[in-house]
Image (tube, rainbow, N blue to C red):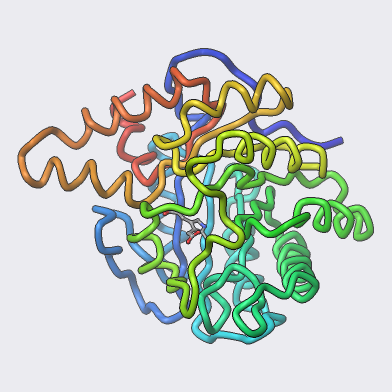
Length: 307
Ligand code: PBG
């Protein structure tokens, strides 16, 4: 039985249980470091992330999407020992009080910052799946609740579902970044994740923003391959897709308000063109109006006090 963490829900109300707060843990950081553009969001050391989670829990935020940034890069990533340590420590302290989603991608690990293993400026799909499978398996052994592959390579969900079934993890949900566009709104994130791509961009694996059919098909394919939750990203450039994806797949479908979208709210506030919390509230209410079943936002802990 796969546990239901998020449900299809057509209410327009914003509630804490549907919010997911991203968190960054960086092996190189001793205490914490502010992420440029993301307000109070920081990259944390392992010991300090535990304190952050404790504070978020007091605000009623308990869903977290974890990004782990190890100190060394690898050509074909195989060493996920730091990831194991981080996840295990978090779950040891908080157990079932939190839902721990772990972003599963190679871009913080590879030398060229691509989401897969590359060879002569092309993705090597076989090696990419192998590395992603090792990663996901390690995260699950450490206690992750949900695996969230964001690599956008062909058939990753299918591959992971197969590996999970083979390794007694058949009850683990997959939250697929199922309709993820190649976008100009990921800038602040790449600073924190140290994942700016080198040599070529991500257009060979991320979706073109103009192609609605392809974007919807990508979510439908992920559903068919065994994803349990679907997602559109960036949120504001994808609001027209959410309802259709839900209707076609019957799966809970959420949206990710990405780093550049969130940073733009802060910049409006900083320039006195608006009020941060009201801008944030409006932007999230629209995502609910568009029928998002869950919302990933860097402002989850801030809006928690407001709703
Ligand atoms: C990488 C990944 C990205 C984000 C989440 N996972 C960036 C990218 O595709 O370059 C973006 C998140 C954000 O901007 O907040 N797999």
